[in-house]
Every structure is written in structure tokens, then in C-alpha cells.
Length: 201
Image (cartoon, rainbow, N blue to C red; front, side, top):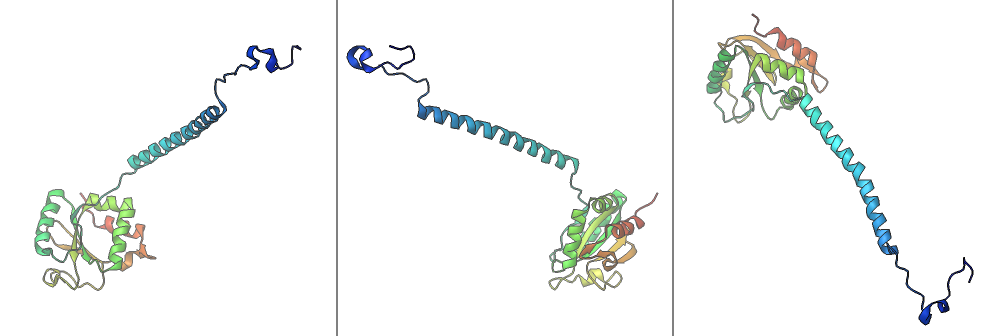
């Protein structure tokens, strides 16, 4: 028998060739390679996801949201504006800040735009937080707050802002139309307005 020829059946006793046992049968070998490939694919995906999560977390830590100081943060027709005003004056005296009355209603699109503007502009939100106590005053069909608002100068449009000292005296009446820019408000104009009325020492 040649060294390189395959043994015939008759070459073995009993006429039956012995079975050759594979370490990894073809089906199992295929499944093994599939599992190995899945692991190789999932490892970089999981690593990438972990880095993205860490990056988002670091961004959130680096840029925390700024919340202005509100004594009343919603337009609520059920509220007692006079009682709210007394509490706001007390807060202003304790903090040494000005009072900013924001008159409007949930029906008012520009009032909602002002809320979004403050929320989306950290510089404006910071100036408000550091120097003002904000009190929202409702003006709607349900409650016009005529008695309370009657003590202040006439309002021609909404939202309207009054700046008061800590004793409740009106320092300035601001038409917010002068602060508008396109469909929102001008950050520069708003900051100039706020900085003009801060308490100076």
C-alpha cells in the first residue's frame, strides 16, 4: 500500500473502516463559530454604548439646568393674588431681591413663548434666579384679577411685567413687545432689561 493512498475497507479487520471522531462535528463547529462571531460583534457595541452613556452623563453634570426663583410659577385663576403678593414681598425682603410680576394667562401664546425662552436661556434664567422673585398673576376670562391689578399701571398687552422693590412699590412697567425677537424674545434685550433693575449696593 502506497504511503499516500487511503486505506481500503479490506485493509481493516472485519472489513469495516473505523470511524474517525471529529473534535468538533460540522454542525457543532458551525454553531461554535456563530456564537463566537456574535460575541465579537456585541463586545464593541456594548463598549460604544457605555462610552455614549458616560458622555451624556458628563454633559448633564457640566450643564445643570437653572431654575429661577418663583413665588408663584403658574397662571392659576383659582389663586388669591393679594395673598400671594404678601408672601412674595416677605420673600423679597428676606432675600434682598426685586419682585418681578408676570401678568398673563395660559391662553396667551406669547406667555407660553416667554416660559420657553426663560427655560432655554441659562443666562436669562440665572439673572432671574440671582436678582428677582417672580410671581405670576393670572388674567383670563375665569379670573381677571381686576381688584389686584387695579393698583398697578394700565396693561395694554400680555404678558406684561412689573418690576417692584421689596416693599411692593412699582419701579418699572415693561411692555414685553419691546423685548420680542421673531417668534420669541431677544436674549440681549431681556438681559439689558433685567440688569437695569437689579439691587445695587
